Amino acid sequence: MFRVTQYLQEVHNPTPLAPKRNPPGPVVIWNLVRRCNLACQHCYSISADIDFPGELTTAEIFRTMDDLKAFGVPVLILSGGEPLLRPDIYAIAHRAKAMGFYVGLSTNGTLIDGGNIASISGVGFDYVGISLDGLAATHDRFRRKAGAFNASLAGVRLCRDAGIKVGLRFTLTQDNAHDLPGMLELMEAERVSKFYLSHLNYGGRGNINRKTDAVFQTTRRAMDLVFETAWKHVVAGRPREFVTGNNDADGVYLLHWVRSRFPEREAHLRARLAQWGGNSSGVNIANIDNLGDVHPDTFWWDYRLGNVGERPFSAIWQDTSDPLLAGMKAVPRKVKGRCGACSHFDICGGNTRVRAWQLTGDAWAEDPGCYLDDDELGIAGDCERVARKPYIRVRRADATA
Image (cartoon, rainbow, N blue to C red):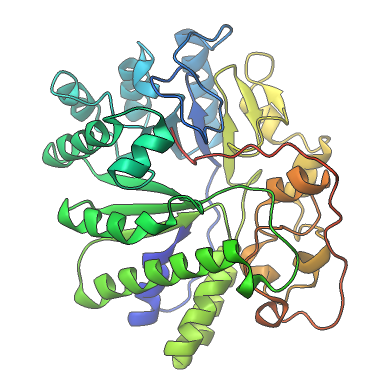
């Protein structure tokens, strides 16, 4: 996750650079259930409104939570499917809070109503993220259900009015980018405290001339709008939080944005961004799916590191005999192509490895989702380019429920 507001605050009011402190353990995004009341066209878990066999029991989840806590995991994001369809969701969430985890709920929001808002509030969730794919017509089309937008927005309002920190989660695509300005206006009108823009984990649209590519132009315009909106809030001192995810090139793009506007702050921001270091899948981000399989992040469901029913998460996460996990944890990662030649590799960390893997079958190839051109990345001369395979299945995915 790239914390746009945090870095823009450093541009507005720089603070001394302190030594980097690594988190004690990874953030765990836990898909507790695969069942969902919607059938979204971009679902990474390929959920449906049916029961899926083999899901972890409450007792198995509690045992895993004990191991996660002992291993130093600080954050649990409870997701799905739709996590509110799991009958024991409140028992799981209450126990997680009692154990001292930061606990988030990632939901489509349609099931939040007057009948359960007291139970949701009673958990004390640190954050509830509700996915909206655009304004009403766009969202309902993406979610394949008339009225889904209004139901989700009602859930946002109930959480807000109950004093729960709630945020909008928006996955940017060519088909909904036109709604981004309206989504940011909606955030302001509804007094929502957080906005999360997720990039689509797609297979890529080319290797060069990214500034003129239609997809990359859309991304750049969207990021400009997010940066400009976040900056206005920072300057005005308004408590709004803007973050992005699934494209660590956002850090490099922000550096260029600041260079063109506040060149005297560029060096300070660059030091901050390098300390962040970019992508941390397989290191500080982990995923457990509904069956207990462990993955480097939520987009690696085709790659199984192990299962918490067979081995503790703590053992799986430290087992670098797995070549993918070993490569993820390598410092620095050994990446190829534009990513390997990039002068800003220390900021981005090679970006999202799953896109490279889905497009080429090589997890260490350049990330085809990088929307900056060679000049912006400080790449001189020719370098190895992505070699496309005829077909690699790409899981088009939202970042949440």
